[in-house]
Amino acid sequence: MGSIDGYIVRTTFGAFLMVLVSLTGVIWITQALRGIDLMTSQGQTILAFLGLTSLFIPALALVIMPLALMIAVAYVLNKLATDSEIIVMNAAGLQPWRLFRPFLTVTTIVSLVVVVLGFYVAPDCMRRLTRWDSEITGDAISNILRTGRFMQLDSGLTIFARERRANGELVGIFLDDRRNPAERVSIVADRGVVVKNETGSYLVLEDGNLERFEPGKTDPVLIKFERDAFDMSKFAKVTPTYNAPRERYFHELLWPDPNDDAYARNEGPYRVELHERLLGPLYPFAFVALTFAFLGAPRTTRQSRAFSMASTIMAVGSVRIAGFAIAVLSLKNPNVTYVQYVLIACVVLFSAYVMRNVVIMEPPAGLVESLNKLTERFSRRLAPS
Image (spheres, rainbow, N blue to C red):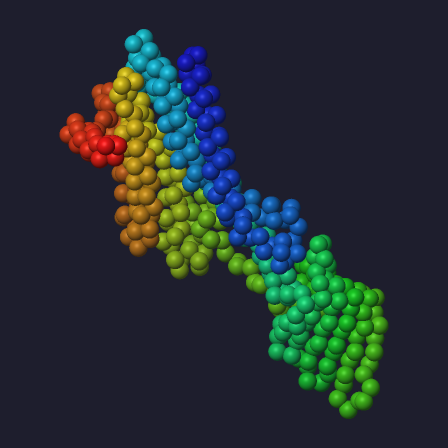
């Protein structure tokens, strides 16, 4: 790799990382704010909150990385043109295809990262997210109970807790169980905590009293205990036994289990997810080629690049939106899926033609003249008399 290639690769990769971290951080914050109730209403720590919400990041990066790469390439090309470096390179005999090579190197690296994220990391994180979310929200005490209020978990079962401490411990617990017609049980405990193991979910009570009222007896049975457990398993949220399309590894989508009932009932989302994984590494090449086609040609500083920049944004945005639309349509019609591959092939071929013939993307002369006349007319009207 020569000095020019190294310079372009370093600059492009640095800009790409900056854009990727910025966009991912902003979108992650908006998603993380939706789960803020993990700390406020369910008594989770800040580490649990950050750990749970950070599992979104690989899935977000899969969508953001091609766009971040496009922005980075556009920035570097604009910088090279502003400093007249593209013109100097072209005058020295460096053809556009040769200038495109370092950008292709960065694109290949990004595409490999997309493969790793899409084929393994992202689905693995989504599985962990689903499992962790089920563990957090699956407890009736964490999900239903609101401190300071009497809550009815079941017909004849009422629970109350005065407050919840920062570590998740409940203080001032009252339980009234009338589900069994043969007896009534009331429990008062100083504190308690939810404990889960392989046998189920339990509310472990400490330092309390139990009163058991039986029919035909005037006096209740009083029991003082230091530690007791109340079974809460029947109120726990049931975790799905199947993995959603985004939680499937690539090989599970490519070779689905013939005995998988979830796949057999609704094959469309799994098929769409499979092609999204296959298309993911191709979008960076399409976006970078399209960006270079609009901005990579040498031009003088008198030639405006604003039209080319705006055209790049519109073209890349249109291609990505078309990809999303085709994916939605392919849910019912599997043949529509292959239109995305045709679309990406057309984008690459168009970009290759523009680069080979060094076509400069400029607005039509008639449009420029009309805009100039319109600007001049407004300037005369706004000018002081």
